[in-house]
Amino acid sequence: MQFFWHIVAMICMSIPNILGFNLIFGKGKIFHFGPIGVSTVATYGVFVPLMHGFSYPSAIAIGFVLTMIISLLFAWLALRLEPDAFGVMAIAIHLSLLAVVINWISLTRGTRGLPDIPRFFFLQTTQSFALFTFIIALLWILFLFVLHRGSFGRSLDALAEQLWYAGSLGIDRRWVTVIAFLIGGLGALITNVIYCQYVFLVHPSDLNFPVFIFFVMVVVAGKPGSVPGVLCSLILLTLLREGMRFLPIPSEFIGSLRLLLFGLILFVAVWVRRDTLFPKARSV
Image (cartoon, rainbow, N blue to C red; front, side, top):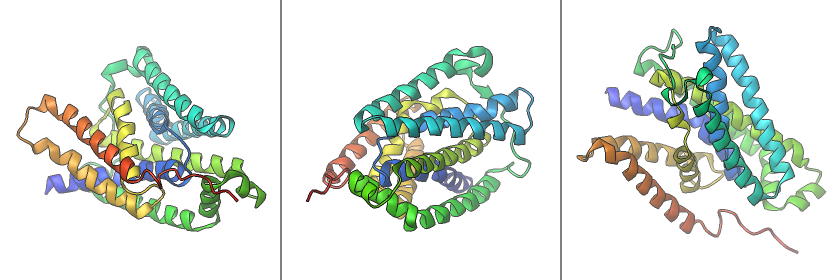
């Protein structure tokens, strides 16, 4: 039963970050390869102040401001650069942020991480995490359903399909892009504030590039831009990832096996969706 609550908690606490990324990368067709960079800022922006004496409300407020700033930076770059160039730049920013975290030992403790993360008073058991994150995930899903089906979702679809035609209809690309990135940043903040409390630890290994591969795999396998599809993909792939712990193989091989398996799943998903993942723009 404990494993069941653990799975529920892991799935539900991942939903804000994954669906926020799906909004940008899946629905908006923006080559945002830096969601883990945003998560890095969100995580350390909250828990470094917290571990240096700030209260939780103050630390979360600081993390929120820093997360919005890095999200605005990514949005600005997405508007200024060509899609491929932005994808490369987003990866470079992520890796740069990770290098800062690892090497600024006096502030972040480097590869030792930040241990003994305090929990909210109402989050003391796995079951309480599962129930709380389920409520948060449900509210986030409803919010994104309304967003996807509203004028903002239609504007994002139009920009993804044909930029110039969308502009001729009066759609402001700048504001749509900025809002999408800010929502993605908020999702990253929510997920990482809860996750670090769950594991009692902030560690750079949870912010490495393979985590981004998992994000892309979930979105691509679940049909980019689809909230129900990405949710189903997240549930199945999380069950696979967590279930691999019980395989009768040495624990030191689990990480490599996961990476190989997830790489294969991503390859197959991209191959199957090669004609629809990033469709060609319509022409007259």
